[in-house]
Length: 258
Image 1 (cartoon, rainbow, N blue to C red):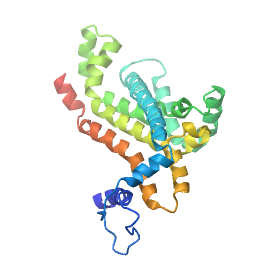
Image 2: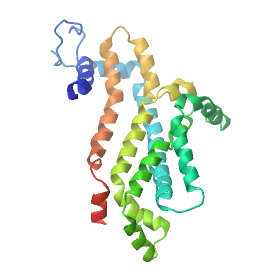
Image 3: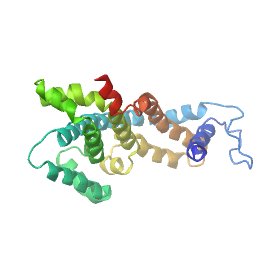
């Protein structure tokens, strides 16, 4: 499974480092370039504003990650720990939205974004993904796993809902919050269809949309296409490397520390 998953990325990395003098179509392929070079990355950056596209993607991803981290946490805590009228109805509506594919609502989303004056803007690209319903349900599950005795003790001590969220809830759901953050970042970074619909100004293109232009421009040189692909892939690796240690921190660890 590791070979099947990682091999394509290693091959793209190898191709992006190969020079024009090296045959990439040889019958005995080699993962290690004979004369590794970074000229392919430099040529991509000189010909296409790939770094500008990357900045646009980072802006969109930052908005989506912030929205999901804050919105999913607040909504998940409310659904799991607060008691109010209509909580089951709201939970049912959240579950119902997961049944609909994104293509069903994409037209209404575009009409809404355009009516708000956000068409052809990075905020318009990020807004529909600012809070994911799946992320809300993941955070709700994480908050539900916190022993109710901890909440009861906090209530007895006079803690408000905000204090319970800050001092009891958040320390115990950091693992799930990191998962939500990574999912939100990858979803925003890799999204292609929605930015393609919303954006018309090339200066506002995200990296996924810009790479399609790269593919059409350098269709005769797979080395440059591979270099652009690796540029779009590296930020995901960095985000996962930074947050992966939180994946294995569950509710039990937080409860013991609390």
